[in-house]
Length: 367
Image 1 (cartoon, one colour):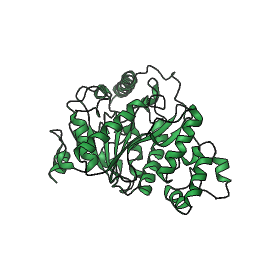
Image 2 (tube, helix red, strand yellow):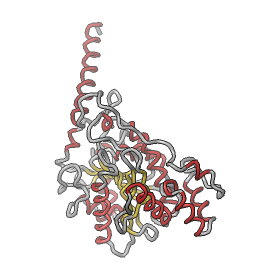
Image 3 (cartoon, rainbow, N blue to C red):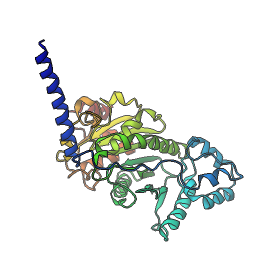
């Protein structure tokens, strides 16, 4: 091939990559890299130094595995457990593997110290960290008695100040599960345990925050598996949360996640379901009118998150979301998506409605 033609082809490839990158930034709501990156909150929680110096010789809050933390508390008398929760609320409240009742009490105390008033009556916080924009995990249902657990991982713009959306998603799913099978005790958790991208900025188009959030999600799920007797969790990953779940997938054991459900996903940073490296069942849903369909499903110059998991070629079990409105309506009451997600979380796969082209879903439904 003449050098001039090779140069033209190379220039064309660079141009197409540039167009894709520019389109991706435009669709995700940012116009340039000049937008400052979302600051990450890292390191163990406040109070860690005093916690580690306590005569009880407690485990390191970020280095010890959740089963180590669980064994530590199991060896303590209830009064000693309560003492630690009262003295080190920000540590115990965020310690995966600690008994849920202690974490609720510790986080209620930390909330009171931070806001000057207690949480709302009945609010169950399994995690609470007010640093930065704030992270939290809120539980609906009786976690100790639950046979089925669902975890919702939301996307951009969710934080402590804007907790209503993920908490509403969890509440709606819990109510639907109770309606669909009241004989099965269930709990649903809104997990905003990572720093999400802001509503404007380049972070939604990159994997930086997902890479930081994925190990936190994996640790949280390992903690749930340690302290509950429920079936492996069904994890629902919305929007940018799908990127977090996609990066966490290969580190999850069969006991920690039985189902990964990608909804309204810009991608998962995996070429297909097999590339996730997870033993969990992989599901997907995307509403016909969701703007995420306009996101270029590419990875170019560090931008983008790859293949759409609702694409038939990805290999996920795709369920319908025909009655969903917009990008955030997947868990709204009355939608076919919420009904499908309840069936998945309850393990009733014969009750899901499959997308017509999804052979994987139809096979699972028949099986």
